[in-house]
Length: 192
Image 1: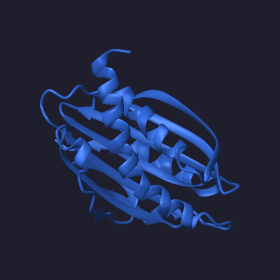
Image 2: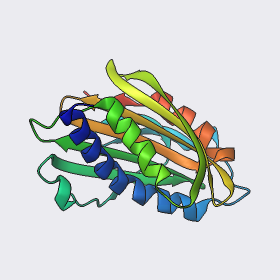
Image 3: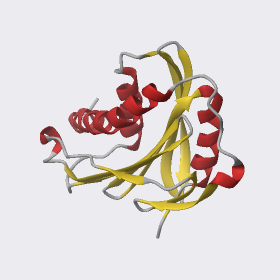
């Protein structure tokens, strides 16, 4: 692996770990049997952090400070989230400084690595699939895992445009999150 690829993977993992920590602790605290999927009418067009999508309810800003170890690489990190019953939805936008090597695949794998590091997660399997969002290259990651012995489902859509990287994350109980993720992920568009 090249020196630049290793650097980006390390930066990507650090950034994604910070963002996913917020998501995972919320998801893990909510995984309980009997969660219901929001009704179809609960999904509405939503605009958040330069993306538009169908989502169940409005997103709220989440303060994510830029960690000291990535301040030389990251210009800005923004994150917004919301709950859909027991399923967590997060949208993150990271703007990288000029000269920092970026990798769509490295960012997608960094997100998976961050989930795997959580001690409550076990039996994780995942797939990465190439995708497109508004004509831009993207990676859609689907994962299945156990959280404290309960089945969970997660999907992350990673989109790169210039120096901006977005990640749309849906995680929660397998009985609910898969249907929500399908609707959300298929509707994501980059705003002009």
